[in-house]
Image (cartoon, rainbow over all chains, first blue to last red; front, side, top):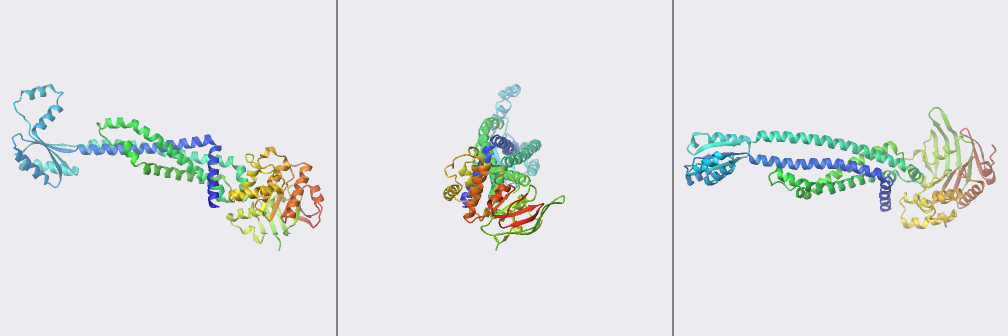
Length: 305
Length: 228
């Protein structure tokens, strides 16, 4: 009996959907727009995290050693610096590699390029690239490198401080997220109103049928639940359509994002495919919850059982 | 013990409107009772109170021993399955066939499909529509449509059948057919309450007649007549 009733409730919900087909289409469309704006926020979050990670990775201290240092002195100095509590890692770039990088960096500068050709030997020493776990750590390392202990070995120590850039990017991303949240909030409100109105219209369309159902002894549950099921159906359809549009859109956008990050960046399609169940699962639950709330409010107002 | 009992029932509406007052009425199992009166005397209000469609202002209504006035809202559907109701305006679903209109009453009660396939044809045979299962309401005459409604009212095998002006929209031939059907149903043991203002119908029946006037019972005769 319960199975028969459940199947009939679902059947009535499907009938409601088809009888006001175009109204159902509008409702689902509005929901898709809401979910699409929320999905865009998700993509923005992933891309901004990637941007931050890349910026943080760029922060380091470049230590230019004197060209006269021998290999064993360089090795001993590296080991000494690695013992510092704020140092996470020290990468050694040989003098030859340093010269090559210098050439590449200034290849557009004719004066420097010609000057290098005049030189008989490599004027550059080896370079250390040092990383720390925090901004304060970098400052302490820099302070240490300027001490008299290291003066015989170090020509110059330079700190690539991207903190300001990171703060500016963070501020921009937060502003974008805020705008995205407002837009999403706006769409969510419209969704609530549209679902409310759709259920109200369906109650009106089925006024006669509902009257007969009451007359012949249908329970309140049997009369109400099809409208709730109908609202969940809208949410399910909207989620499926959003997912179907999401991945092709992401594939289109991926090359531009990769180019922005210089050829290497997170594979958005792969990332969201791996997390699709949770990503769209939560969206469906949110949309269904919102729809149920709207339908319950509409029934309270317009359905007298 | 009576099947239905109205004890000191009154119904007031806002603005001082008295729809019913001092209604004391007992109906035994198997009776055929006509409740008559002019328009606005409270006949339909009495029916609505009986099926829990409206709440009483005073008194009690007992149906098969249960006090309708004390029923919780979740129990009202159970009461309505025990009382078959037929109205003047048919209330059939135009997009469903005769079979589907009648089976609808069983579907909403969660009855299984195989039971529906057995019961519905039986009930339609009682009302003489066994050959019109796949017709739509617009393809039937007024009398046939009303018979479908009666079949739907009977499908739960109720102890009580209430017919509120069932012949109001019918011609005299169809009216006679419907009344004969109600008599036949009564002969099967169902208590029938016929609410009408058609004096010819009532006087031909020669059954119990309860007369309402301005919301009160003015006459209750075992073999009554309806005199305007």
